[in-house]
Image 1 (cartoon, rainbow, N blue to C red):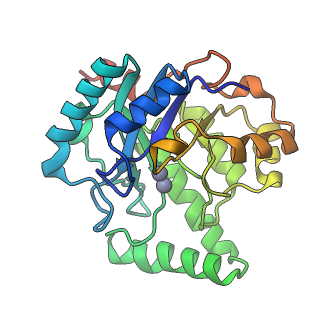
Image 2 (image 1 turned 135 degrees about the vertical axis):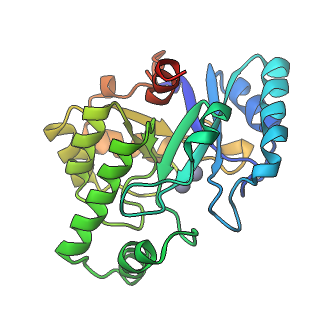
Length: 258
Ligand SMILES: [Zn+2]
Ligand SMILES: [Zn+2]
């Protein structure tokens, strides 16, 4: 399996260690065709991309692309902030970004309802390794599905990392709307059984993301590769390996809606 492109990388604009240029250079050394810089969404008080820094990020993307010859997308890893499916990437910011990932993250600013009913119970159970209640699984599943339904999200990042949803139901919605399920190479998130079930019961397509927080990890996917091999996932369902490039929903949405 040869990675064609890496659509999940962080820089110092959130809590990565390298610059946009560092990531681009690493991508060039790994012979990747494209990368996305996907720093954390605005509602993360400590790690989120600052709105005032957006012009600098976009300028860095342009110049790093010019200097390295690697296609670089300005992306964001938005935070899921409500049970009704809101993320912290509002529509007025769509023009600035090319790639839209969404996922659950700790310590994110969200409404009290989401904090009490979604965030705290998920993170507490994950931390204490307590089995989630059926109601919590239903609520988390519904939230992911609402995110996919209401936002032109390209990929759900690290599905079920520290949260509990019915991965098959989420993947069914993702398949319906043209959203990818990311297989994350930094975090252990889907169990072997969950990935195997998703593959067998849905037609969803996958992306592998390094989730690199340093340039040295751009394009590093061994953790994801090991999971894929254990499960025997048909690699033809992964759209950023072996020369393939994904068909991104966010791009199509923006083309259609001006
Ligand atoms: Zn993340
Ligand atoms: Zn990330």
